[in-house]
Length: 296
Image: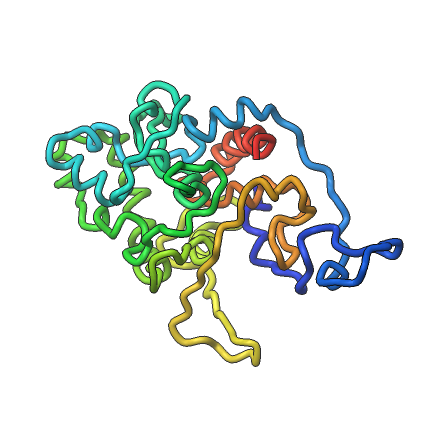
């Protein structure tokens, strides 16, 4: 699972498509520029299982205890922090997820705890003509307050016990709290529509051991963002614009600069590092993404 963290090794600028070759007989154009990237084998999964897992599954591993989601008063705060004003649902979801916002999954974690957590559609679900489109990048998300607006960071063991959370449920909350404390600045975007995916990548890489995936409250590496002259940028806020998923099958690298080659699902699964902090769990999640990649 170490490939989760390899996306920081960004190669030279190259297009993500097989965009040029010696026998290319097309008219010259932008597609003639850059470097040719050959296709690499992709592990095959079941796309039907992948879609069901995407919309109902436990690939995020941890979350906010479901009892808080449904608790009078407290639930309103949780929902407001995680889903904002968007309560739209998606047809065809199962169980508790039938009534969940499209950008959230309710699931039972590997340790048996019932939780809710943001899913892939937080960034990769958007609206067109009022309809939710799976795989359309979210161009209207408000991440100016970071993830969840920092609501969880103020919780203490005493307050969680007072809310009736079990030891297992508190352990899940601690994973949410550690992330909000590690991303106090980095994930707060300057404007509505900016996406924090690139910034989150840096935070997750910095706070996980590259071999064991164990979490560290202290950053293990310092990420220095530089301008084109090589000078450090003061107060850098990394943003991105999620591309549509339906282009992924056409590309030999997931991103426009040629990074994320090889088996694509390692990069697709990187956001699960919010919760994943050991190799055993990473291997379980990797198996789920084998099918989710087939769907995408």
